Amino acid sequence: MKIAKRRRPLSRARIIRSSMIYSIAGCFILWILFPIWYTISSSFTQPSKIGIHPTPFWPANPTLDNYRMVLGIPVTDKNCVPGIDIKICQTSPSNVSVNKIVDTMLHSFYVASLVVIITLVISTIAAYSLSRFRFVGSNFFLNFTILSRIVPGLVLVAPIFIFLRVLNLLNTPWALIISYTSFTLPLAIIILKNYFDQISIDLEEAAALDGAGRMQTLKLIIMPVAVPGLIAAGVLVFLESWSEFFFALVLTDSYTVPPLLAGFLGMQTFNWTLLSAATVIAIIPPVLLTMVFQKYIVTALASGTGK
Amino acid sequence: MPAILVLLVLLAIPAILTVFQSLFVVPADGVGIGTFTRVDNYLYIFKNEIFWATCLRSILFAAIFIIGSTVIGLAGALLLNEKFVGRIFLRGLLVLPWACPWLIVGIIWKWFLDGNIGLFNGVLIRLHLISEYKDFLSDPKLALLMTALAATWRQSCLVALLLLAGLQTLPRDIWDAASVDGAGIFQRFRHITLPWLRPALTVVTVLNVIYGLMQFDVIFAMTQGGPGSSTTLLSYLIYRQFFIFTNFGVGSALAVALAIIALIGGLIAVKTLYRKIEV
Image 1 (cartoon, rainbow over the protein chains, first blue to last red):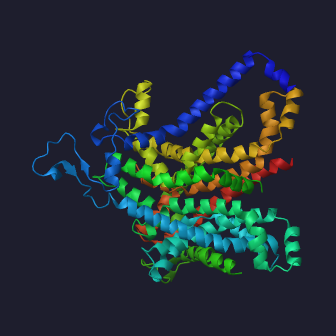
Image 2 (cartoon, rainbow over the protein chains, first blue to last red):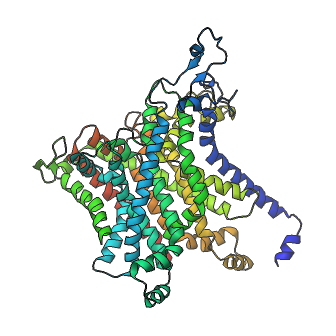
Image 3 (cartoon, each protein chain N blue to C red):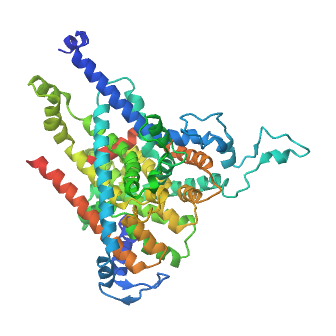
């Protein structure tokens, strides 16, 4: 039947169908790309060219100066006639906060990596025990884990803020690492439990018969199968830590990228072309991560939706 | 289990403390508890018109966000489930908004919609839909819609990815069999695709309810709650009570109210979407 379909000449219905598909696809591409394209094109626009009406789709005389400024590299004005001192023609990024972006990205990496490591260690053990043992309160704990995803950080911020202030941890990376871990743990536990549930108990029992201990079983039997789950959980946790804004805003003084960018928003001296360059730089790591690990992430999230 | 202890300490105790604090007049430094006032903080917010107006605004924002993301996401998933040239490219594109942190979504849209230099205005002018540049975010009537649209932009892509994963497990035979039996495309969609997607739709809707009601980053970046109070959502009100007025008692009461609204919203989503699957 399929062969018959293929040989059929282009019928009217098929033309209508494909033109519908392509027009919807076109709308979708515009919907996704337009806003982000404007940010990218602005980041290559000269600050003096930004006010042109109607706003151009493509930057006239694209330039890398915005990126240079943001990354703290001095910019030379081409139209300037150099006198004795070439430095007259150079606009150095004098604004201290401008070239802070590199340091702040390193902070973000530091926080996110530590959160990933801590979360994966704790959640592997927790998810494994939830998947394998029935213990007093295990059901309560599972429900609690799921529920805690629904009541998010905004509601818990005040007590955490006060805790951290009493412990003198405000404005330190640990303020973020501790609070992020508390939100990423439930997510990682749910994902990993889904993976552990898929691993057959027979295999484990066989290992136990051969004299492997619990930890050994975990290491030799479970881990190899659960690696996709660990990757997915790790990437999602990293993304969450990288993206988190609210806690970083109230618990630290712009320690990570989102509050730094939010700070730029309010600055008169910080124009849109610079901000757009900073924004593009800031989304490169998460975009690369999701592109590379897309398969794992979607599988993990979708398997969660099946239940 | 040490893991359980960690989680209890990090999540349960703050949650209980929030409820606890909502019953007290907490000193401005937040350390220690002040005077026990029973439910005075709640009475204060319930008697306040601003609270109710903000609740309504939050729910309106969430409604636009939920409906928008679900409809656009479902359309995207159905589209990507078909075969066409450029399908892989479009699927790759879906990740782009989703990889953007919420705050950056706000930044991107703030400037995209800007009344002086925004590309959105440029497009509308070229299409002759408007005659001069318009500042969408300083129009109190449009600001809420525009912020919700920005949030929808990111979420619709996640919804599309998740629903697509659900669609791809749909056995092609069922669809083909129905088509042989003479079911039209809309009938097939209604009686096969939608029921099949119901579990995925439930989870997606619960996610949307949470993100919609708790949205803070996008508002912070785009409008800071303005113009006037036209985009002040409950989340923003809580932020102001805590960190600008340092009124921990009232802030906690608001936080508890928001958590309850989110729980009710989530429950409604689960009940309405899940009941039908059993019929």
